Length: 455
Image (cartoon, rainbow, N blue to C red; front, side, top):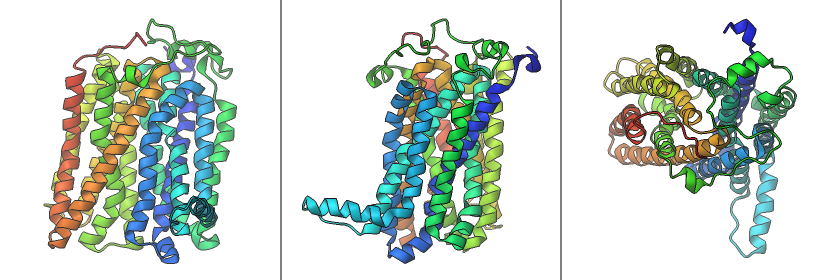
């Protein structure tokens, strides 16, 4: 089909998902960029700050499970509105953390429980609300992609919207400190948090399910549905079929996705959280010194996200079905992070060596991520995609918590011995090998493509 005849409205939806993901990462990074000043103002120890950030990770991980269920129940449009409303309010809530903490302590005291410092209580609650809403972004975006794109285009579309995470990671250090310096840290949370409501207005105007989308032509709708399963999808206005988590866990495809996320999501979080500390501990780079290296690294990951999303089409155009083409692409991608093994041995040359090698590894992660998300919509009917993505998201979140905890323990242990480089070498090795191990497990569980039609 000619692209001009088909139409391109689906890419408008992809652009909306891209900006939602950008906002998602902007909101979650405000605290980390202001952590030094807030720690001084409120007298937080490293443990206090760790507890505040852990509140986000745990709530995010468990909320992913329920987010998928809520999205499948409410539908993509309403669910995304709910998610971005909650996370934007949670982001803004950080500005009023002291009042929130006082309220929490009042409740604790009324029940005879020990109060905690108001700043810690307030920020932990704000992080929890932020995580609750942000957990809806990726399941909803994957579901929207499944609704608006044929299978052969889904990983490319996923790669594009997923690159919004990298844009958010680049924009945050360029905007948050400036806002805080000009108007105070509270306004940084308020202004960044309010951006979500602007996006929500656009989403309400431009999004409807494809069958009800008046801005899209019939040819494009037929193209989107050109590779749908024979099993009919739920009709708008008709009650959607309900699928229990226990039934979904009975499929090898669910476990393949969940294990793939569990083993690899933590790598991204490790790079995100620990690279600044690594550069400080190994090369003495602090403060504004790390802005350029981080900007270069996250710019590299944009290439991986978009390029990795396109990569499976090479195999699909040669005759592979979408799932097989995706798995072949993921195997090729899984070899790329092995370059991270060279970060420590050749790091003596310059700090740019580990930055660039880790940038390649992080870029490969985003390429992997664009494809592993899409394996769900390859095999599961659209009405259950959100729930399966939620299960995998929870598994990925818990994998991230475990890898972060392992890194902290290794760095304390080897740092106390004056050999912290050994701790980083161990962690870099885990990160480098995680993708090949994950691919092997996924291929073992689902050796060949089988679309699920009994849900």
